Image (tube, rainbow, N blue to C red; front, side, top):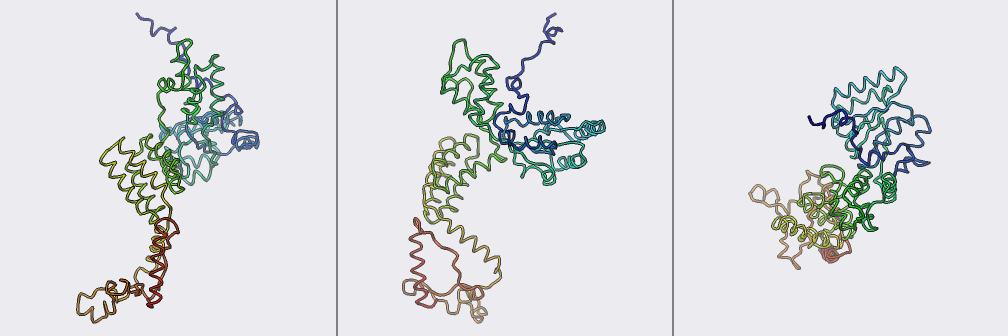
Length: 435
C-alpha cells in the first residue's frame, strides 16, 4: 500500500505561508500603524491606562487588525477568542457568549475578536450589546467598511473606532526586509522591480509578503527579475474595490472633486482606477453628465453636449474602445470654466416653490380658453413680447404675493459672462418700461 497516508506522512507539517510566519509577536513590531501603536499612539495610551474598552478596527485588508487584536489580548492579560461574521450565526454567538461567561466567572476576562463584523445583520449586531455592557466580553470588531454606514448606532456608541492605515512605502519596505532576513536570502529583484513590488502591494502587508513568496518560488538560481519580468511572474493584482461599498463612493467622490477643481490629470487617474476595477462605465457616464450640469453649467453649455455624446459613443462602441470617449468627456468637463450658478438657482427655486406652492401666477399670463375665464380676467393685459420693441415687454411674471426675485446669478466666467450681459440689458429695459 502507498505510504501517502502513513503516520510519518501525517506528522509532516505543511509549510506555513510567509505572512503567517512573519506575524508580529509584539505590538512594537507591527508595521505602519505608529499613530495607534507608537509611543504616543491611541492604543498605547489605552494599554497604559489598564482599561481597553470595546473597539472597532477599521481599515483596508492586510494592515494588521487581527494581529493587533491578538497582541492586545496578551498585553491586557485577557483570553483571546475569535469568530468571523462570514462563518458564524446566532448559535455560534450564543455559544461564544456562554464560554465567555464561564471564563468571567473563573476570573478570566475575554477579548472577543470579530472579523468582518459589518457582515452581521442589525439583529446580530444588537446581540453584542448586553454582553458588552455587563462586561462579559471586551469586543474588538474588524471591518474594511465605513463603520458609520455598516454598524448599528447602538454598537458604535459603546465602542471606540480605531482607524488602521494602508501601509506606506516605508512600512512595506520594512516588511520586505524582515522577509529577506527570515528567508536568509535577498529578493531576486533589481531596483525598479523592487519599487514596482512595493506599488503592487497597494498598502496591504499580507499581499506584499504573498507576492514576495511567489517571487522566491518563481526565481531560478542566479536569476534576477526586472520590472517587466516581475509583472509577468506575479501578474497584476486586482485593485481593492467593492462597487457596492465605500471604495466605490470614495473614488467617484475623488473623480467629481478633481473635475470640479479643474484638474484633468488627477480626474483621469481616478477614472482609470474605477474602470480597471470593473466599475460600470454607464454609471461613470451618468456621473460625468451630472458634473457637466452641476459644476460647469452655462459657463460652457458644450460640456453637457460632450458628456452626453460620450455616453452615446460608449453605447455604440462598447468596452474598451468606448472608454476613450468617456476619458475625453472627463478631460473636457475638467478643463471647462466652472459655474454652479444654474445649480444654485434651481435649488433656490425649489425652496421658493415649497414655500409658495399654492400661489397663483398673475392672471395676465394665464390662458383663457373659456368665456368664464375671460370674464374672470384670465389673459387680460398680457403683452405678446414679439409685438413689443426689442421683442421684450418687460412685464412682471411673478405672483404679487411673492414679488420679483433674483435666483440666477451668472458667474463672470466663460459663456455665463455673455448671459450676464443679456440679463443686465433686459433688467435695464424692464426698469425703463416699469415691469
